[in-house]
Image (tube, rainbow, N blue to C red; front, side, top):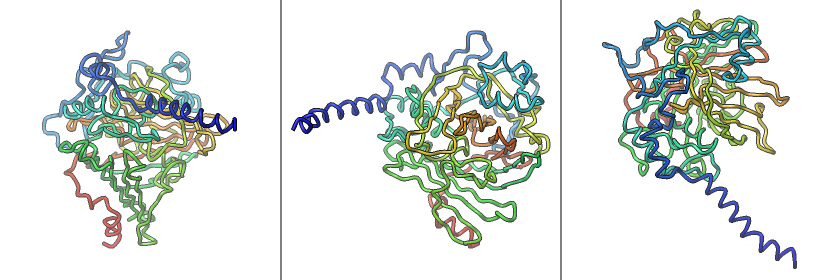
Length: 457
């Protein structure tokens, strides 16, 4: 009798407590907080001012200067080609800069005495169209986390949580970062084995469309799929014709994620739910994991996300020079050639991911470092089950003033810090096209039926 009474009495209390916790997670920014996006913060939520010692400048609108005669989608020039590094970091002097280096970067410096970071003057080049800024301002007070904290409701056409409150919001900002509306780009994937041999693992073409960023759309008309992508492989011969179709959703409880694969040998399209989590990524010959693709792909609900805070870090940035290098020049036997990789000092948000109780993942702990100006993940560290640093994922952002956008969708990869193998993915080196804006594609282009038709041709 007493136990029953206690249960009856305690349930409303527990329910109220849970409701309060969720309300705290779900609540958006106040009107007063949102107003800062038009004063002390940039339109996407970064600090507008520079840092105290002047090594990070104030944001002045980003870089939108398109060279005369430039044709959008062709290889973009490096606007900072004449600059010299302001400092170089090696294993010999890394301790002097340890507070601005991730654990993965420090491990790479320790592993290879000839690896280095050339740090150049910082340029806050990130920019977006005005309508993206306008939508971001609206999202600040209307966007809410879903009950599972994996998605968002009420957001459209801009950063959902520019006044970020927790790790879940920060990661959703990355997922819904401005990358353009519809783009096409080559996918060269080079794998370097532990003994220094370079192999072309995959050559493919990808089309990405983001209905979330349809300029003529609205929160009311949005169908819930923020990204649709189609990748078709052309090399090597053993993979030629293989294809992947992806539909990512802002709320999986309402509209589930969809992913399909076309296998030439089977001559059929099949659902591919294993293209997620810690499944080895066949595009990268298994060196990468699928949830590391594009710095983050698919659900990460096996980890709890904690917003650690903002800090100044050395990160890869404005790497048009790396994209212009030849494959031989860029991809070395142990690491990317430091001569062609540009590092800068930027403020980043740190999000720590730790494995949830009862869940499994080969990378139980990760740290994500998100650019404050774009919300894109620039670096990611991963630890194994024994607590040893294992993986370093990087993104060499490409500056595209013709959009305008600073994108991390291309030129990214992973170092296996234990075996010495690494890969460089979504590269366009020596290709005639490079992250090109294209006309909006019909819905059927991203359908399983259309994927099957590719194999029948």
